[in-house]
Structure formats: structure tokens, C-alpha cells
Length: 198
Picture (cartoon, rainbow, N blue to C red):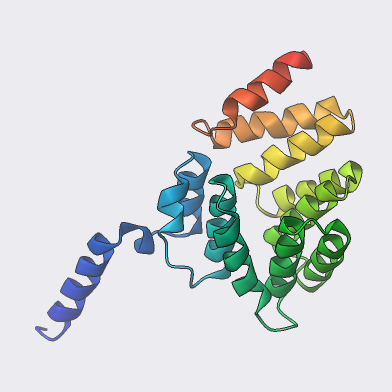
């Protein structure tokens, strides 16, 4: 019975030393949604979903080099891994190459159709390529696969606003506001909703 005590103490000490490491992707997303990007960046990036969230947080903080480095780690994964395409696409978006970004994201979505981040990245790539109808559909798919992902709803709402689908925009923005009440994007979303009479 005494043999397990050191392991429990060590695990508890580790959790308190780095509170983020004990949190899952959903907890990190809550920090991200509240604009706590620096806390997200402090998480260990051993899960590709966390690595993607860290890269997104670096982008929000305008740390382009750090974001690129985080995406490049994803891009270095195996050729059959959808995360490789997600990383390649994100690096291409940062580099101002929307054609390459769309192609890599399409490959990621084909390899990982059930992976919300693949469709989300495809939406970002299509937005960079000015294909807002395609972007809206991609963000919609990401939101369908993970209805609790606030950013998927936020970007779907933005894309739908650009293609004048006010009904779908309002639906996604309403969901976003419920999921991320402390988001730094909240005033922007409320302003868009007021402008469009929603």
C-alpha cells in the first residue's frame, strides 16, 4: 500500500507545478475563448490538438514566428497524418500563399474527415483565398463535428456574414456568444449583429 504513495505525491506535485498540464483541450479552449492566450501557450504541446491551439494563441498575440514554428511541428508529422496537412496549410496561410494553403487543407480534410480542426483549417485557407462560401461550409462542418468549439462558430458567423446569409450568421454568432461569453471578439460580434439588425 505504501508503494503507490510516492507516485501519487509526484503526480500531485506535477499537476500543481504546471496546472495547465492537467487540463484537457476543452479546458485550454476555455482559456483561449476568454483571451487567456499566454496561459494556453504554457501548455505542453504533446497532443496535436493542443499544439494547434498553442499556434492559434501565438497568432492572436501577433507572435508570427512562434506561430509558424508551432505549425511547422505539425507539418513535420507523417504524410498520412491529417495534422501534417493542417500544419502545412497554416504555414502557407502565414506565408501569404492561399493556393498552397487550400490544397494542403483539402488533403488534411480528406485524410481526417472526422477531425474538426482539418475543416477549420480548410475554412481559414479558403478565407485567405477569398472563397467565403467555401469557407462558410468548412467552418460549418467543423462546428457540426465539435458543436462546443466557439471559434468554429465565430468564423462560420464571419464567413456567412460575407456571403449575406444573415440567418446562418446569427445562429453561429448566438452560439459563439453563449460558448465564449468572455471572448475578446464579443464586442465585434455584437457590433456585427447590431449592424445587421439581429
